[in-house]
Image 1 (tube, rainbow, N blue to C red):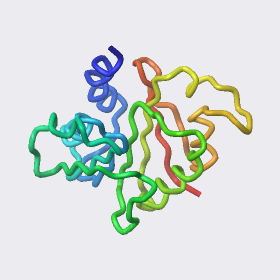
Image 2 (cartoon, rainbow, N blue to C red):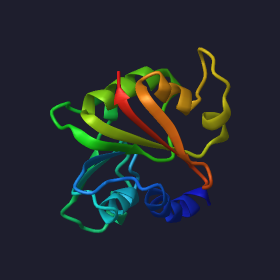
Image 3 (cartoon, one colour):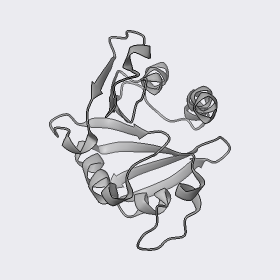
Length: 165
């Protein structure tokens, strides 16, 4: 199953690409069971908030004082907490909300913050640019000055974005 393979690979992918999470305040969007929150703590995050619209898997997460799991829709999240790093692995966001989602991510991101998006589905990787494209790299380029693909050798591509405009 892709989720099992993916869960094993995220930690390695983050380490291999030298992503700096040391002492960072992180937000993990679409956290499911919180497994990626644990991986972010393992690579140095000082605190992680994991949000998901479905809390049915939160019970699978082991207790960790650095991790908070919330049943929360990203678009209704308060802007008073800002994050150094925002992650969304296995991107699965509704197309009609792309602009709202990107704007919300930028509102929640500290000025010098980083965004890491993981995409596994082929359509998100290779959809040709157009007004109706779901190509996530192109979407990020519309909202961030610096966007680069860090890794394509895993089940998911890992994309880094910074310097929002």
